[in-house]
Length: 243
Image (cartoon, rainbow, N blue to C red):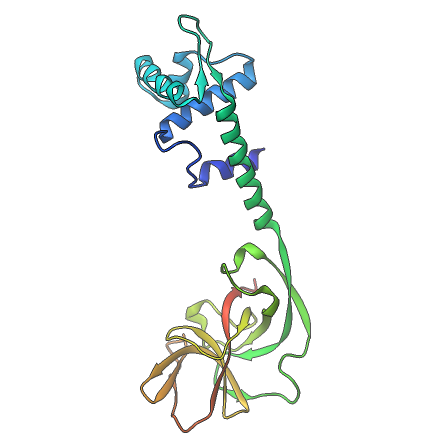
């Protein structure tokens, strides 16, 4: 329940009617929590203290609006007669359901195969054999991935070299990749050059040539002329830092 409360407070979800403000929601929450804890509804003064509303007349103003919208019922001239309606309870349940869905999404893990290494330095010849031969795997939370990514196509590569350190990609880190044959300027990609060299760099198309830009001030960009074969193999979707 504590986790639910944390999520509920942080969610930007409109759980009540548009006429119900955050202050109205605070009042409703105080009524519900006080009733659950003590078995009876709070006084106007209790609501003032728990919501920082400055006067009981203002509390009455909010209660009238909540009553008009059908979220509470109260009996005139009877103290502590505030009751949450079924409409309000349903809204609270909707919110808890949304929170549970987010919790499930956050803790759902995926196993991604680590299929080889990618060089983040000068391009080097591709080792004999398939670069994507299965080596081991890494578990990640699904919530870390960009929305809409095709999970079934993802694979991981271990980074070798330090040409991308200013992009927070260091030697020994793991990058989660998705297959791609095209890229837009500024994307970090795995590129094969001359059919036998691979490297991890930022991609920029500049006229008839391609610039592969490192994220390391000590290293120069690599310029690939139109006559040189170049193949984009995949894009980085997530970096896993090795501590």
